Amino acid sequence: MTRRTAIVTGAARGIGLATTRLLLGQGWRVAMIDIDAPELEAAAASLEGVLAIPGDVSQEGQVAAMIARAADWAGRIDGLVNNAGVADFRPLQETDFATWRRIMATNLDGVFLCAQAVTPHLAQTRGAIVNIASISGLRASTLRVAYGTSKAAVIHLTRQQAVELGEHGIRVNCVAPGPVNTKLALAVHSPAIRAAYHDAIPLNRYGTEAEIGEAIAFLLGERASFITGQVLAADGGFDAAGVGLPALRIS
Image (cartoon, rainbow, N blue to C red; front, side, top):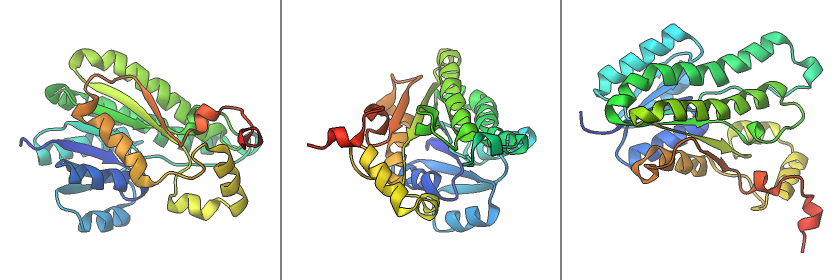
């Protein structure tokens, strides 16, 4: 009952799973939430100190049940990582409304619903929330009208939550990852796309899932006790580079 407990959504793979492993290594227990039940069970099977809870973060009733189950299991909730998200990359004119709503439902509604449901528990422990946005929420790009807009909304929602929940001792921050070496990125980014990203990123490489997890774990933990309402771009300097042409940075 005294061991810190975090809820991580989208925990079956990628950044969510990497974050789960990091938190476990730091002594946390983790309630792992994901809509993909088989993948979630497989990921949780080799881990100790976790509870696998399949469910859809865009559904209000399911969210309430999942948070209640995690609280019953752990006896306390100290942190929430709103990582669950879906992506869709297509031009504006080819983005139908059903696609728009699907992206918003998971990427934005899920963040709202999970934070709202967990707030009474976090108020008791003076815990923290880390929302996962994207560099696409800070920098506009082609083919990301729904995805980028949803992540920009997550960034502002983070600030709203931080301002309102601060009086309860709850900190709320946001991590905006840049290009990361996930299975999805490896599958959909052609060599030309990867080379272009490398040229545009000052550190000249993609990040790793574990590196993003480290940023999340820091903001969730006690070392960030006076940090709230902030957006940390874990992006190798991509956002800082702005519109500067890579060719101009070659020395």
